[in-house]
Length: 146
Image (cartoon, rainbow, N blue to C red; front, side, top):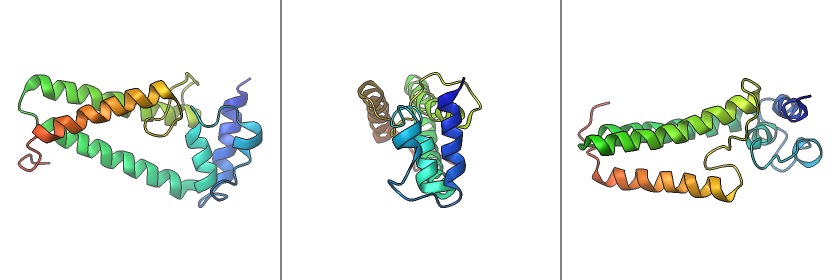
């Protein structure tokens, strides 16, 4: 039981600090089924190591910080709640995917936003990002204090 999760944890563990190199993952080629979908972070952890996963998490943190600035810069309450909801969708997707990959939550098919392969996930993520970009045009982000 838990074959995919065990292979995910093996991939994370074999990545070490700097990883085995881009394209040199053994888990994605032979053992981890559907590695390009829900367990893409396990493959990234094996190939790029702790440094690569940390870089991705820093980029997500910067994205969510910018989303926070967009939320707080909205004058209309409806726009603020909409931007907050969209940010929550993206943030919960990334947190839940990381929890599944690390074995903290059971695998339920939650894809990693902006990284996992798939048409409907990519369409929904790009719709959310596009709406946030539209909200950023009307936000007073320069006058908002952090």
